[in-house]
Structures are given as structure tokens and as C-alpha cells.
Length: 315
Image (tube, rainbow, N blue to C red; front, side, top):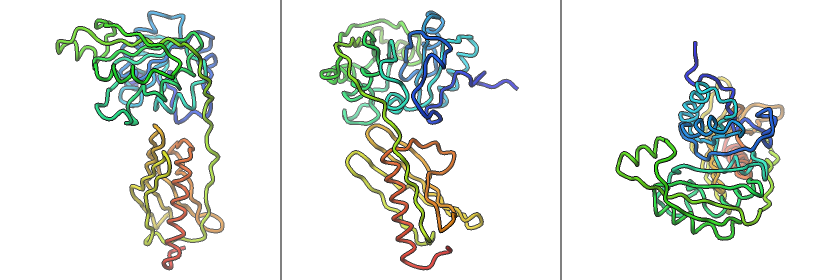
């Protein structure tokens, strides 16, 4: 039966990758790499791939529904020079995209998130621009197109100290994306384009995974387990719930970890092991091992030890 997405071959799942991307190996050739940040349903990505077969184009998208539509467009268009990186932009730039490996990066109509400039969801803040600078080649360029003037002004205010020089101009509806068509149909005929040219290269290395310390607790009582949230510096850990299956003797703690601009929603499992119970990220959840995830494991350990001290449990 044909798949809705045609083929998964162009898919790069961020949480399934363990090291830096090798663009030449991925595409089978050495060629300039263009990155579309927030590639949506893939309209412009496929258009760009078809128009420039001598370049490799990569869409970076967080939402699976949009990734699936992009895969379908790539498959139907038959463009071998297109890929989709499925995951968070900060995670991808921090840990997967090698320094100085991009020829161009761009974003078309990113969500302005009308809230404070410290909102972790808002792209192209000061720290993000510095990171983006480090991933662009010395002669690399970037641009952002937005329909929102306040967001345009906010991005410009972030530029000093990022190694970029910014210029702006008004452009027409030239990109044929879903949101551009929406705004154009509503009467907007001009959009704000910010061009970012590197004045200097910033050297920011790829972040490496934090070595994971799993825990072994001699005993715990699931009926008495009391979880607590915690925060330290820029890391927040929220305990969302706990499930225990007495037949399989497995406990599962639902955890949300937010640190800097990365949010992870995962499960921590408490499973029988020689000498007690092992506390570790649940198999299959593909968590990125960070300081925040380690804090979550430590909090589950403290809760298990506290439960064991308050009464007799099942083991």
C-alpha cells in the first residue's frame, strides 16, 4: 500500500541521530548546503531544490504533520538533493549541524510568538543568532522574511554582538508558502526581509551529550512515591505523573525538562534489576542526554529513596 509520505528516505530524525551530520555522506556528494529553518509543509523547500540542483537543501521542522507533507512533496517531485531534519531548531544547531557547514540559512514567516523576548519558543534571539553564525561558512549568509513588523524590529535589536550585519527591505509575495498566501489573501502585499551577512565568524563547538548516570535503589514503595518539581539556573524539571504496573513490576515517571531553549517530554522507568530497581530513561523515548535529564533521574532517585524510607513497599 502506498505511504502518504511516499518515502522516508529523505528523513533525518534529530532524536535518532547520535553525532554530527556528515552532509557529503548524506547526499553522496560535496555541495553547498542550504538550511530552511521551519520549513513547514515544504512548498518553498521543494521549489528551491528543483531550481538549484547543484545545491543540497535541508528543511528543519518540528511538527510531524508538516514533515510528512514535506516528505510527500519531495517524493512526488523526485528531488534527490532535498532532506528533512525532523526536530527542534536549537537542538539541531547545538548538537547536529557542524560548525561552518552551511552556505545559507533562512526562515520564511517564523511564528512571532507575541510575548516577551525571553520566550524560549521565539527564534532568532541573540543567542540563537550567535549559534547560527557559527554554523554558517565564513562567507555564508542568512535571511528572515516576516509579515510582522514588531517581530522584524525585535530581530534587528538582537543582531549587535552576533557577528552579523543586518540590512532590511520590503519584498513581495515571492515564496509561495502557506502563510505567505494567507497574509497575501488578507490584503498584505509587502513583507519584511532581513538579510544577515557575516562580519566575523564565531567559533561555537557542537555540544556533546552529558554522560548518563543511571541509578540503582535497593527498594521503593510505589504507593508512597511523592514526586517534586525542581529548577536550578536555567534548568526546570516538572514531574507530570507516575504509573505503576504491578504485573510487570515496572514504574514509569512522566517528566518534562526545559533548559535554555530545549524542551524534552520523556518517561523515566523504574525497573527490577540485580540488587534492586534501576532508574533510567525509558527505552524508546530517544531523550537527548542533558544536564536537565540527569537532574530528572536524580529527582526520581530521591523520590524512590524517600518512598522506601516511609514504609514497606512491594520490593
